Image (cartoon, rainbow over the protein chains, first blue to last red):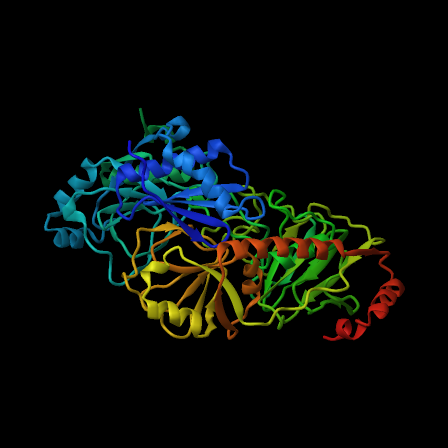
Amino acid sequence: MATPDVQYLSSGDTALTVQFGTVIERELNSRIVALGHSIAQAAIAGVSETLPTYCSLLVNYDPLVVTRDELVAQLQPLIESPPEAGDAAPAHWQIPVCFDSDLAPDLAHVAAASGLDENEVIKAMLEVTHHVYMLGFAPGQPYMGDLPPALNIPRRENPVARVEKGSVVTATGLTIIYAVPNPTGWHVVGRTPVEIFNLAREEAILFKPGDKVRLSRIERDEFDELTAQVDDGSFDMTRLRQP
Amino acid sequence: MSAGLEVISPGLMTSVQDRGRLGYQALGISVSGALDTDSFDIANALVGNESGNKVGTGALEIRMLGPTLKVTADSVKVALAGTATAIEVVAPEREVISACRSVTLLKGQVFRVGAVSDSAVCYLAVHGGFDLPPIYGSQSTCMSAGFGGFHGRILEKGDCLPLRQPVSGSSSQRILRRPPDPDNSPFIRVVAGPQDDYFSTAGIKTFFETGYTVSQAVNRMGMRLEGAAVTHEKGYNIASDGIVRGAIQVPGNGLPIILMADCQTTGGYPKIATVISSDMPKLGRMMPGADIRFKAVSVAEAEAVARERHERQAALIGAIERFSGSVEQLEHLLMTQNLISGVTAG
């Protein structure tokens, strides 16, 4: 694989944004996630943590331990060497989602904006193996892609003040599952009973960057039953993992 | 109810904070932590706590108006730093305890920190720290996600903050006789980028050559500024990328927002510049209405400033002296420094 042409952008004196490009694309993102693992393995003195996003890796460091120039010199060989899989092996998930209209208030709008009908929108979301580009905005909240080009629709003009946790939202060809209740500028097209973030759970956060997610359709009675199981703690989380 | 400090009145926005939640940003977990880490460290040092990143010993971050607290433990050693405001013991007998010295308060005593007018934040540390579970290695309150600190929120009337050490000796106290002079200049040093190329030449000029004012819209997540709009050249949407504390994002209306300790880990607005780490404590102390002028420095300059600041802070902590805690010795110490007038005011 060719050595990516990266740019080192300064984020103050405590972080470096290692930018691989400006277009959201899986191959590029996978290299970014892999670089994060390579840096962790290399245990560079002064580097406290890294944060992968769509097109760049934010490398946080302590300027009292390592300068920007010293850091760049240590990062360059890691970027040039082929990515290691290591513990970066992606997990595969299957997440149940209900598309009933009260849980998917923007499905009609998304259908109209994309030129598809509502069932075609749902079908498109179910057929894609979603790639978790990054976690952000709230604990464990996945930014996933990619939907077919028809679903590359703009965000809302006016954000809504609150959507519930578990809301499945889409815009710009990407999909997010909400970790906690929050405002959104995206379109709500479904809801999962699964808590993707719960501190009371041993594995509080479900996904990691690079994971693969399939959505499966459930009807309302199953949504209600699974919600009750989640609430009383009897929900079997292992059923979400795909081999 | 475990013994500790009972909240009689919570103040405006009092939360438990430490040096922050490091190592989990890749999972979407915000860093949080004290806005003014310099004063936080001094407060902890005054009560004999270490406050390094790994310890997670939280103190109360007080915003504008402090809490009234009742000691329900046998005794507790406390200290206030980051302000010239004093701790007032209001019951059973009135007493005024100046900032930047420790004091041991006994069961039943009620004390408060009133209106703080010289800084947006200050810190009340307790010997041993609060007995609160670390979440992802930190006691900091993350209000946006509702975890950490005391039940993931600011203090409320009736809360009881449990202490790790419900008994503190009174025979040994600590004092910092020469607290740092407040830096009231408007200059905040920044490193350009990471997306300064998204702005027009005129926009960059506006940003550096006109002054800004801290608006009323300021909290632990961000500080909105008022002033001249900065013009973009390549639009105001980027593929969301990682955010550091101090990043200055400019949304569509052109008015800069400085991202603070509780900011989200990722964001999609271009960031014109980033406040250097050494100036973040000063920024955290700035109140609505304060003037800001941005001054560009190179990363190398910022690194040199960081080293100088580290040494200065270590010297300050090193200058903290022990004393017996008697009133006589305290007065003697203060008289020799001719600081008594500054201490008894308020």
